[in-house]
Image (cartoon, rainbow, N blue to C red; front, side, top):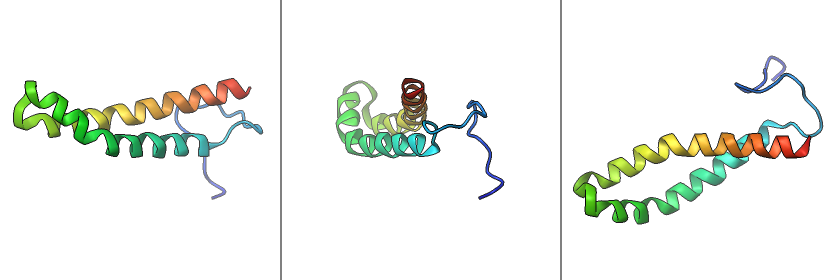
Length: 81
């Protein structure tokens, strides 16, 4: 693990408040929430999208979950500095 660099779009400054575990834990949190919410979101979208609601929901969450997790991780790190 000696050759591990910083995460993308992160500064090289590392301190007590910086940890990639913040990003990892927020990603796991949002992914678990997405898995729980998929049936409800798909059933809500089914009135407009019909049979493709589940596919659209999964594709949307695959895009949305990492964006939200990264944003939350950056927010937490900024608040700790």
